Length: 284
Image 1 (tube, helix red, strand yellow):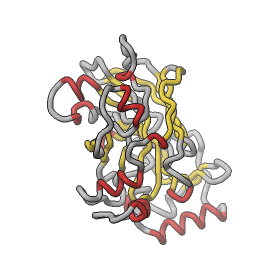
Image 2 (cartoon, rainbow, N blue to C red; image 1 turned 60 degrees about the vertical axis):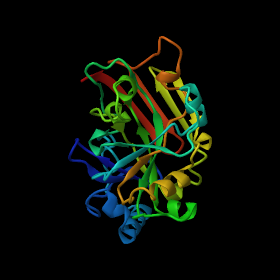
Image 3 (cartoon, rainbow, N blue to C red; image 1 turned 120 degrees about the vertical axis):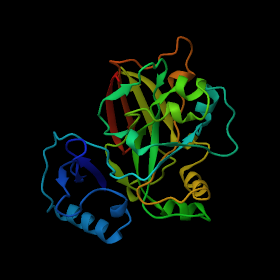
């Protein structure tokens, strides 16, 4: 299923995109698309049944699309997780996943405006596969157990300010948690519709020019290993999100003068089967 949330920011309603591409209202069936729903197999079955029989009300396709997940618990991010991206930044492939966090309040809709922070000189783009957790997980013993906890997948844009991240001391968090720095969606695609999370093409364009064109097959640590690994350092709960890293092609990895983002730029992203995003960048 393709689950999403539509309507004004802060007042989104749960919805579903059916097999014919028709937007359907789920608000009469479930209160929201969130961790509680993803952990409730009975509720998910009811949603699937209603989608199959065509009984759900039709919604205006022109409604704003918000983040596909409400009440996100935490966002755990993996850095330097593609061989080609590590190479372009001059870093060696890490022996273990590089882990950092983003605050849930960085999340916005897939087509919402992204703000270039005040004082920013190096705002960068990163298309990423987001993994959404649907089952509580601790100390996963296998990749199979880890994947069984995955509810679905979405596109994440891990917007980053490189000077804040790298040149200002401390941890990466300062360059990762600026307002609007995690567009998510448009859909949460349930795991049963993604045959192989290691066979997805990720692309990103800036002002119509293709900048990133990679595949999750090039991940250093695949999705199953990332989820398994994280579960040994923190408890993963329904409604948690994992951003799994970005392929080569970011501004930081390009020759001088590096083409960092400026107000007025348009960034578009896509991942196979997970939809598209489009954001205009403006000054904070």
